[in-house]
Image (cartoon, rainbow, N blue to C red; front, top):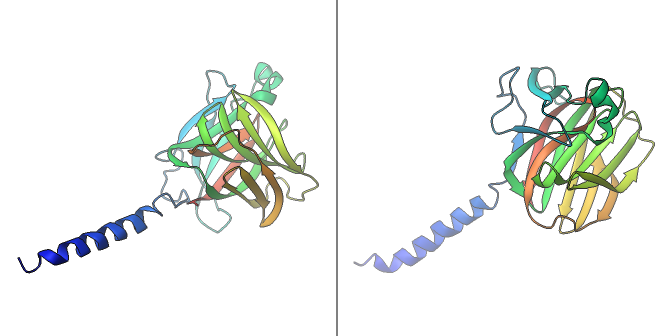
Length: 228
């Protein structure tokens, strides 16, 4: 009985420890090195905005990543292929996302390499996603040499910011980073801040993912997700 008076203090300490650990529970790094080549890594789902019945093919590949790791996650067969698909490809957005990994205020970064594409190349990050038709994106396209931030609402894309004359080319790894706190969004490429914009289209927490457009074939690696 003499230890009873210490129980509230002990429970408080345990609760405090648990909360401090839960606060960082959403932080994670995905480097794909544990994935099996030729397959979609565990937890990822594939879909498309304004897509057809055929889904793009995303797989883990045995390839050298930007930090020397041994596997990357790549879109190797875009949905927007074939004569009919190419004619409507401007509105086809291929998505690989983590529907169970959600955040509102986030700091995201990922390594990206544009591998190929005649209509479009490159790609980028997706966040605060409600579903395949509603989310924020940031992307870099080496065919146009520009970095842009958009939102997609009900399948329709609207540009929020653009930075032009970037020098990253096809086949070169680069790092994209996006930070959103409240309605303020910041966008970076290779550590250089290229955009600051405010938008309140999506105010709630949503899922995180990767995004490409049209016939872009793109590789991704070292996705870092931080909950702010």
